Image (cartoon, rainbow, N blue to C red; front, side, top):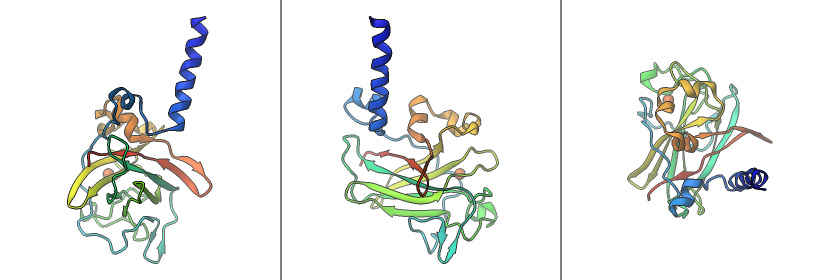
Length: 207
Ligand SMILES: [Fe+2]
């Protein structure tokens, strides 16, 4: 009975995608994973690197940041064939809970306890991990985390990560500019875990 078999098959496909979140249907069709879409760097990339720029944005030197919702942002950096990009560096930067960046263009108003920027080198399997805030909105933008991938002197990717289910996404000019596949690649759920929210953001770059 085709009318009952079809929905079952669809459910099986959904379960397979959930089990392997960075394998998208388009990747299977092309025989390679689609590249993570690039987006603008924006005006607030640090002009001077903070003294503390490690994986933990909720601790800046001796200060702890206690506002907002703590979240882990993590994933794997791979090439389109699924091989880890060893030696890649991942950077993130974002505003504090009040919507301010550590940047002179934002008036230097960011909370000094919020590190605001972090950089890590991926492990042997291409994995990275940051402890940060579930991003907060600021004037004119839906919540997002800026992200850059470098390999030695080369910039492989600059993009932005969005929060699934945010009502502001549909009103955000940069998010709206993405096509369906781009939105799916850059918009991830922040789900409750034992030690804060957790967001899985796989990154595919041409290395
Ligand atoms: Fe931004």
